Image (tube, rainbow, N blue to C red; front, side, top):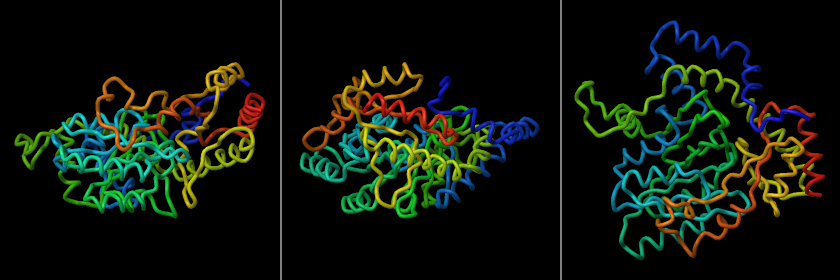
Length: 374
């Protein structure tokens, strides 16, 4: 089989027909390319979908995490707890504020933050007394919502803000509730490969705190005040452009349907591959957005080569956890090291996953995985 796509954005575009072209044409016609009317429309629809009161759109998912940290005044002398098994942006924003990221291990089954290890990391920081713990950034890795009920209890018990980095997991839920039920803010990225992506860079922050939202709206435009030329705080240049907002409005209209389709593909993978390979574990009551369908395998390189020879693209997220990377290896690690993150970096392998994968393609992938892993 030829031309299997790891993520098929063109199939999504074909499914939407002319809607995206028409949406972009409307922006070209009215010409309000910066902070045009589609921005507020999108923010309202994201709040409705995410079941939170306010949404602040922004230029990318990295700035989305930066905005609440800046709004809370987190900086030098402060600590923010982050997973190591994730993309660099999660820790990068902490370091850029001048605060210290402290790395936390993940659970071996969900790949999300380990609450027990988080408690050890918090206790370590408090015992040393050098820094002030301020916040936790939880990543909903590969699309599955984290164990927020437990993580929220830990955050509240220690007086910490709780951020849900839902760049991969926006729209995921636990017992019918999205992360906003527990987190102070939910951030997301609209990078094209994300479950809800635009055709460039984009991001958003959702919150129920109106005052926080007002400050973040100021921060995303250079710290503006009521007077355009009287900036009241040091801010960012972090606006979402109107063309991307127009695209996202159309994509959001089918996003719930796409999540259902992703779960159909994931269920078939799990059913037919479960006897051959370690398939992803999903929490009871959880619905994943399946940003990635990630296996844990032995002898990964040989299996990846064999899949490539069969025309099946794969990816490794992530081959090196943050605490092993040059820029971050000198930051603290909580507890007694990060053994799960270290191990999984050598075992994870992601298969093609998108809502438009037809039955024939699924069958081909499944049969070849069985043959190669059998």
